[in-house]
Structure formats: structure tokens, C-alpha cells
Length: 209
Ligand SMILES: [Cu+2]
Image 1: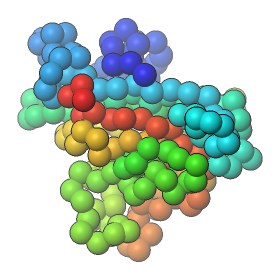
Image 2: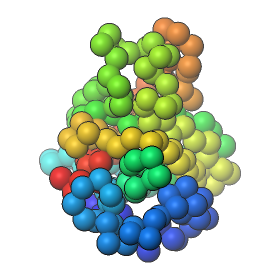
Image 3: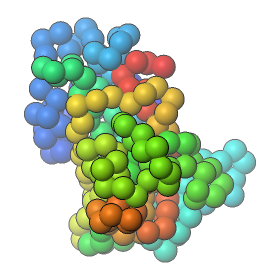
């Protein structure tokens, strides 16, 4: 894991999109990695292993038929100062998954663990008082971080989300890959089938904590 950097973000085409999204202000360089919400974020990556080792890996697959051992994942959080306050972009990249397939993906509250449910519920900017949350008023792509993706013919995929808020430090700790795309209907909103794999990502809201 390392703090986000413009150099790291400049490596692929998606980074160009991200850079455009972020539209770093002139103060961005000094704020980047500094204290407060003005710049920063974390990055995590790994190769999926089964949750059998000690200690557990950071990238765990629970359904090896959907997320093979050895597939790769990286997640980067970029927090910048937008015109109306903090802006958070999350970039998810995967490779080695099944080709031409939709995977649901979300930021979850807890770190990954030995079982799929260890990652807890979805992170919500405004928490739904009723849990588990399937009310579209709370379980939606603005209030949660959804990173659904479709892999290409080689099993590579990426997704970018952008929100005009930042994570509460310590309250968002994983990205979970699900077995299908995310539903939006009342009663089903935010669900995406089983939890196929998980990467622990200690999102810090750009605070460095
Ligand atoms: Cu999820």
C-alpha cells in the first residue's frame, strides 16, 4: 500500500479519465499526501489467494471458479479539493478474471476475513438507519461506492467512481467482488449475489490516518 500519486495514476488510459475527473487544483501538489482532506488517499493491491493462509492475505477469493487464485486487483483512492468541497475518486482494476463477464463490486465497511461476510455491509455516506440496507434511498451509487465492471476478452477490467464526499477514516475497509451486477430495485437495491472475492483497503478519506 502506498499513498496515491499522480505518477502511479498516469500509467493507463483510465488514469487519463481519472486525471480529468480529479482536475487537480494548483494547490494539489502540496496538498497531496498532506494532512486534512485536501489531498491523498490510499492504494492497495494484491494477487488473490484462498483464505487458508496464516496470516490471511489482503486479497482473498472465496469462489475460485469466478475469481481464480492468482488473479490481480488494485484499488486506489484519490481525494482532492473540488470547487464545492472534497472529491473522492476510487479506481478499481482487475486482471485474470473470467472473460466477458459482469462482476458487481462495492466498498464495504470492514476488512476482508476468513469468510465472505467478514467485510460487513456496504459503506454508506449517509447510513441507513435500517440494516441491512436495501432501500434505494440509501442503497444507491451516490450514497455507496459501486464499482461494477465488465471484463474484456482477456479477463481484464476497470471501474472508476466519483463522489463529492470523502470516507470517514476507519469506516471503509474493503472492496468486494460479487457474482453479478448490482441491483437497484426496492428490497434488492445494492445486492449483487454472493461475495466472490475481497481486497482489504483501509480507505482514509485523504487524511493519512
Ligand atoms: Cu458488496
